[in-house]
Length: 132
Image (cartoon, rainbow, N blue to C red; front, side, top):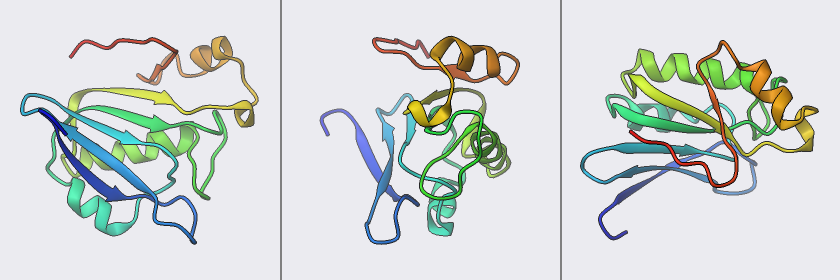
């Protein structure tokens, strides 16, 4: 895709579909886009190992709740982030952005920001730009 190498990985969204999550690599930085997924399939973890991602963009559909059925909430994201660090998929300095939230979270934007204040998570908003 132009100057980017895009790697598609299996997601865990719905059992009757082949959902994908992506790693975008421009040769300098790697972005991990993990929407419409819950805990990743084993083959995805294996392919992520050693990737040294600069930024992770995570599904946070259910906000402060936990979900194991095709989406994530903050407890899931924290668990995923820990495993990504453990397998050297995510750099220790990587920025972790949460997005893909909806009414299912039960929180307004400001409430979500307050909820993750001390979790080293960035709550996305329309038009956000992040410098690496």
